[in-house]
Image 1 (cartoon, one colour):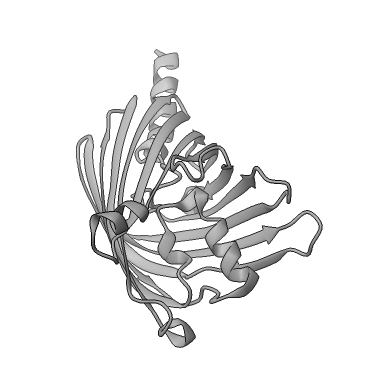
Image 2 (tube, helix red, strand yellow; image 1 turned 90 degrees about the vertical axis):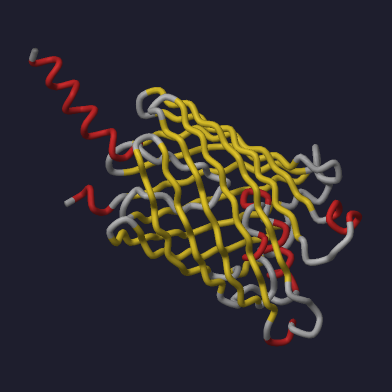
Length: 274
């Protein structure tokens, strides 16, 4: 009996942190309480120049009842082997979300505001665009000097052993400042799907990201604007922190075999320390 009680206590401690396992290439908003996260994505190019592209995302959310407010600060670095490194911030995102949960099913509705902080040209622009592979779901964060809005919904199913999640959304970006005359309003659609398998504190996820720029009309324009990626992530989840390591591959013919990304990250839950 003491052993059974100890096991139940351990499950009770772990289960709250495991309820909404993260899919690392999807939107980050999950009903896991107040958190601070740092994600890194290193894109490795198969070329003679030996260029490395690094994307760093700092994410934080503060829980408020069934919802939360959040901020995302993206930073990208382009690092040629024989040259100086150049980095730039992308478009910062702030927003909020509300979560609906009924048993094993849940839905998170998200609204975000994009601030026009991304570099408009030069190495900073190329860093923001080139380092996007780990976050193909966030092209609006690289759109130069864009003020924008994000609307999203993430349905999920969690049976403790099997996780299913969708990630649907529309992003609208309005270039401002010096880029307003050169770039039209951009409209993006994202349709992502993922499957996860859980064994104790370990979660293995397979993720498919499908994002399209539908700013231009016509079948040829639409076909040219689709980007796709597939990712695999192994995560360790606990009551106090989550850690993950993964790989992301582009599925488009033009990029397939030419680049891959290694992702890693850490999420802390401040409330669990008190």
